Amino acid sequence: MTAARAAGDAIEAQLVAMEARRCNAMIAADIESLKEILHPDLIHVHAKGQIDGYASYFATGGFKVDYKTLDRSELQVRVLGDSALMTGRQLLVAVRKDGSGTVRIDSRVMQTWVREAGRWRQLAFQTTPLDMSIG
Image 1 (cartoon, rainbow, N blue to C red):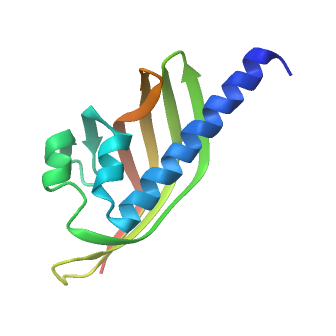
Image 2 (cartoon, rainbow, N blue to C red; image 1 turned 90 degrees about the vertical axis):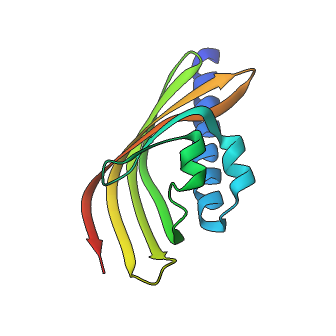
């Protein structure tokens, strides 16, 4: 394995770990960790098409639910210098805090990560439902 390939593999592993940290923070409702992971110029496109920036994401975003499951699979990472594209599948199950039911979204997700001052942060998130049921 070349040094460049080993470095690329290390970055991919770091980004996959960052994504796991993001998912864990969502389940734990750990806002402070999310504020560190998400970029201040965030664009987050939700499953129903609504768009949040950094401030609106934390004001309303996905925090009207209690996340029960946030599983990622089939992750692929393409590193391009100080940016990276991550794609994969996401299964989200959450209970609405207002008691109006459960949300289950099986989707494909695309994320953009950027590295600034040696630190990776998620700049963009787009989810496309494969199966969305609300009960």
